[in-house]
Amino acid sequence: MSAGDRTHTGEESDGEDLLSVVREFDASSLRTCWTFDPDTHQRRYVRADVPLSAIDVEGFLHNERYGFVTRDIYDSLHPASYHYTVRGFDGVEVFRCFFEGAQVGVLCSFDADEPRDYGRLDAMLREFAGGDPGRLAPD
Image (tube, rainbow, N blue to C red; front, top):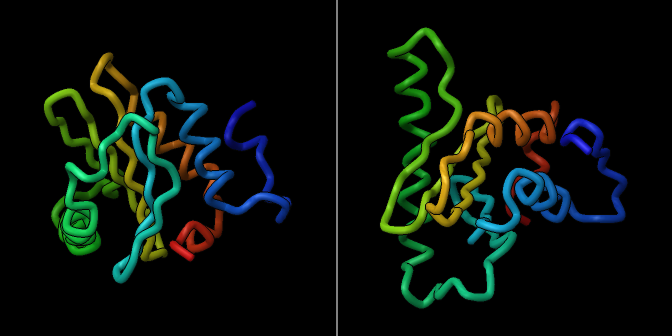
């Protein structure tokens, strides 16, 4: 089933539906999934073997919020719209995207065990969010 085949029924939270889309992209290597806005964040998933105590989650996500500013800067510097960023760390890749017209972002981490098509993940998330990406904002 593609992300476009999903409809929000109200029986599951948007976070659970979002997580289904990310797992469809790559469930076996998914480490974490968060949603965030300029003020807060919400954990959507953390794999059992990921030691959150080794990460300053609050600080890391606060840093990711700078993306709301840099997205606007990139949009003013380049004719194409900014969509996502991937960062590589020892053994981990971090994907971040934002949605047009909404102050909400998605941050996911994956094991860096194979090449991934993050453009595909971005497209899947945009298709899932549809015309209402604000519904993905933290509760």
